[in-house]
Length: 224
Image 1 (cartoon, rainbow, N blue to C red):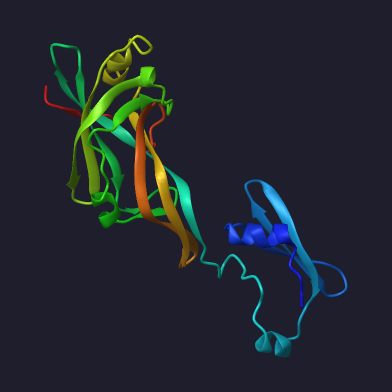
Image 2: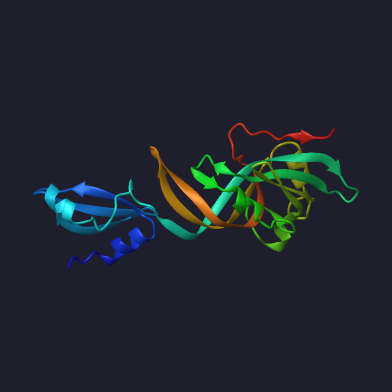
């Protein structure tokens, strides 16, 4: 029985990328890469074509692999639009796209049913993913689907720690929201590239950030 090194086997099971390196004397070694680290497998001798027909490879190459990574961190960043309407107590009402069904720029596919199942109403809005209660600057008050897009509405208000949040959103210094959560990632190959399908998505938090999710995204003013 061939014993696969434990670290290499664990890397493969965790969804690491496998590469094959040829060695001298008809030998080769498979190496698993994950999170900037590499894990070497066992050195083997190349099989003849007849031997390959009789046996299946112990570890599939990346081009053949379909890995499901459970409970992975999910981050989505979208551009922000806002309603030019302030209440007497200084609240600015905002509206933004949470996520859109389909394949995103980073190669992840989100499904309409997954987006429809999210529960965003009542979530607090934070700055830069810092979840201290004093760092809360607003709240989501409504969510709805607009075609393939999951949309949300809410309000923000200046605070002691962020006294200029309303003005920064208005003048465009802050023009994006970033959402974090958990989900299962299933890697599948479509034509000449890999797609990461997101299943069991659970959006946990929403933050304002300064970096737009799309290079040409602009704030859209609604009302006047």
